[in-house]
Length: 121
Image 1 (spheres, rainbow, N blue to C red):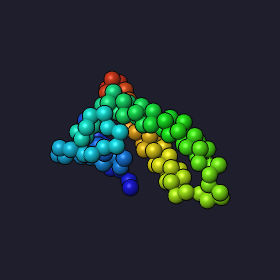
Image 2 (image 1 turned 30 degrees about the horizontal axis):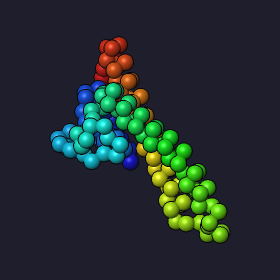
Image 3 (image 1 turned 180 degrees about the horizontal axis):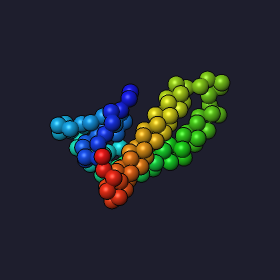
Image 4 (image 1 turned 45 degrees about the vertical axis):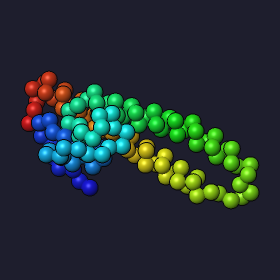
């Protein structure tokens, strides 16, 4: 999905598709630090906290997944349970969302840098 060009005005955005959510009162968000209130595109601190939460979740998954698989490996008898594929899919989705959120932090930092340099469009 292509994102529309954004001005330097602060406006609420979807963390995944980066669409403008102006007028939306709530948005259920994965790993949100502020509940259902959409974050604005220049909220570096809050965007950074959410990205940090996702990085921590990835770390927990990276530590727990191999242990879970190893625990069941001795009892699998060649059968791979469905949850192992689901676990791999979860890791892929979580990695993708973490990358998107980190890009939002970078974009917010760029907005503030441009404002400080007086280069707003």
